[in-house]
Image (cartoon, rainbow, N blue to C red; front, side):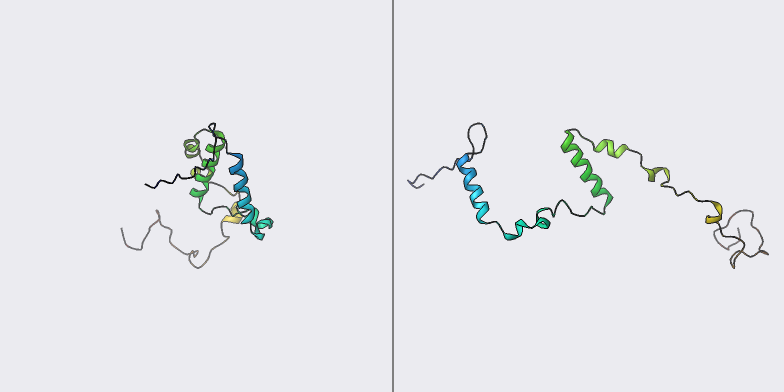
Length: 126
């Protein structure tokens, strides 16, 4: 070891508050290295205007994290146990039969066709 004493940098006081002199030094360094782009509104709010995730799991995980971080309670179990519209077959679009079913017959469904008693998946004889 060398006989030199290393300079001790005080960053916080005994209560954990930042040292005022150290805070001034940090602010001065930040102002020196500030880019002209930092003044641009688009650059300042880039993360706030960002796109939403396409992946539904990523979005759900992000929402549960934010809810847990802001409320202080674990919320993932509640999200996981919620019943969604997809679980019950929805979302549904209400339409009438005239929109859903074609009128009359077509080439694949001719009027003279023999009606089968049960639907068949192939032409093979049972």
